[in-house]
Image (cartoon, rainbow, N blue to C red):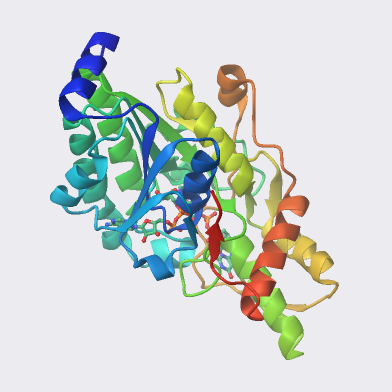
Length: 345
Ligand code: NAD
Ligand code: GDD
């Protein structure tokens, strides 16, 4: 889309410069992103299907609503007057959720289809889509001694069943909206993100939050044992939320047109993750390995060659530093001191 076309679209639709929509803002990443954009002076609208009292963060000065963005009409309402969209809404979770809710995960295609169409019709200037490392082909992730994943490794396609296929399809919709309609789209492939104000119980939690919770439960109960899914030798990289928000904003402002990794390159085994959380808690636990639990791929890491070349930046917050903050927030939430955050503008 040329600048003239964008200007015309904005003039006819009433989009205001500096007005941004964050979808899924009642969730983990969306909540942090909406707060950060607001702090930077943007006029932010935040939408999530959850009732406001269940949002992890509600920021003062942000127009926050409950809305189901799998419905086309809600998407049109949400994008009205917006110049940019960060689309983070999705029905998702850690391995315990995505292995057992493949249809629910794939139904996020309704959100991603209606949001793209609504954004196009409203003359939105820039559109961000949160994809996942789960798009990468399974046969590249069969060993814990991983070769880090490069962007080209998504094809030939053999992504995570359900969730990964939907993400790959929605990535391609962004690409074709750019090629056919001239819409400016940006696509991040996030690798496992963790931090405060995210899910740590209930079935959607990912390994960092789950392990923090389990260590805290063991400490509080006096039963000094822990259940770990798999044999503990599987490997991952985990990205702290502040890096995720910074990378997301840099990508949105960049000229990068292809999907790109936003992930930490600090590889750790699940046993190594438990070691760090035990150190933070000042405790050692008896480990029990549940081999028939959801395990996902055997090993996964982010190759950051492209992001370093394109943005001159990569996530750098150490796992130890990020886990200290995450552990503290989960601990405070579990012992009742952690109210849901209301973030001052
Ligand atoms: P989250 O579950 O905390 O947030 C997603 C939010 O989307 C939830 O609050 C949920 O209520 C909302 N939502 C779901 N369906 C909706 C609908 N129909 N209408 C409106 N809102 C709806 O997840 P997150 O960790 O913040 O992830 C944000 C995005 O990043 C998702 O698209 C996710 O797939 C992607 N992602 C996250 C990770 C990660 O490790 N957290 C990794 C890869 C990709
Ligand atoms: N969730 C969880 N809970 N995982 C555990 C646990 C536990 O108590 N104990 C060990 N694990 C192991 C899992 O078996 C898996 O092998 C590994 O920790 C990582 O699990 P998750 O954090 O749940 O997910 P993931 O890294 O396989 O995939 C996540 O990251 C993707 C992006 O990289 C998911 O959140 C995807 O939705 C996301 O797109």
